[in-house]
Image (cartoon, rainbow, N blue to C red):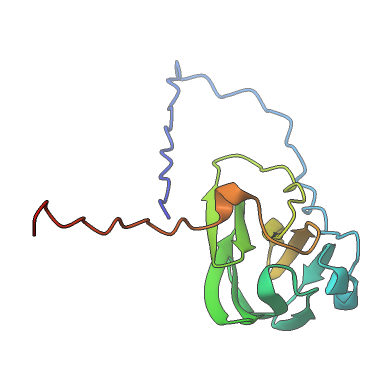
Length: 171
């Protein structure tokens, strides 16, 4: 995963010796609280589609699509969540804000953007997870699943075909 660096340019103004005019101060309102469609009801994820609020480790049951039966959120930090999936196999990983991880039969992958990502669309045989919001030890986790079954052919790993060489004539 690539990290992006941001630069800040500070501009200093020059004064002519006169005292500056007072400026209006903006009151900084506290950031809005994160909300999720299903609140903290992790059972809403049993069908493979939910949006839940995480405040720490959690065990979330899933539908079995793409072989995933359980998601164990192990920790949250300023970047996103750290998790383990259980089902046909076990794997672990991290998911950052503005990234989507997709899991499917015999594979998976992640994509990230520099801006806010829209919700993933359901795809048969695929479970997609997204950290849709993150603030001060709280995260909004969105899970989107398509119908059970095999994923689209474009996601199925190709098995290379090998041709057996034919013997030369007369040999």
